[in-house]
Image 1 (cartoon, rainbow, N blue to C red):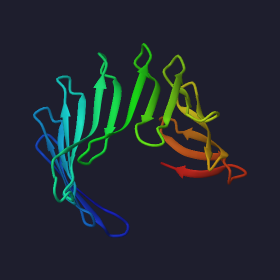
Image 2: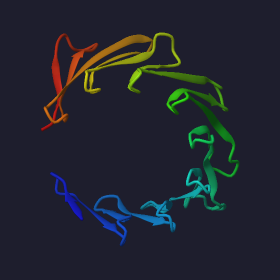
Image 3: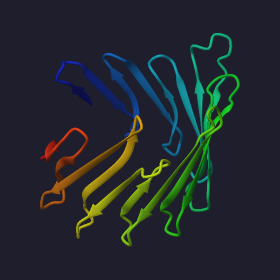
Image 4: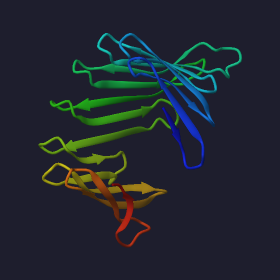
Length: 219
């Protein structure tokens, strides 16, 4: 299959007999190549510049780690572990470890995740293992139908809240955060057609708007 963009550039995609994406040829970037195991899980991705990512899984099919091979390391092209994961009995990610993709493989950060009895994500805590050693904590709350109601960030007052209609469609989002030590508040509204398709996203209020502004329209 192929895509031609308005600027004339083209991208071609190729698949194997079971419809796994095997390569993407981009006229500007080059070729991306994908390899799969017998369970049709991606195990290797080669980028146009020669960079290689490899993936390993446990017996349950959970991703255990990603390993990078940097073609620009002149004296040491040994694959380096970049990410490692652990899981609970339900298959939820418990921890993510990120390492430097160099000879040291030093730990850069570790993130721990918590879940409720329905396996919904309730919190995540990311600790940076390098200066400034920050800890970034997020919390999530849901309604009785499983819709996300609030996401709280690591900074006091930093949170996103969501509202839904009787069809469990998100109709509004309130975003409160900080940028360069200044409070930034955004409000968005969403409209759907009779089939439930999102047809309009509206920026109701932001630091740079004084009234409704349509920013996305889909048909």
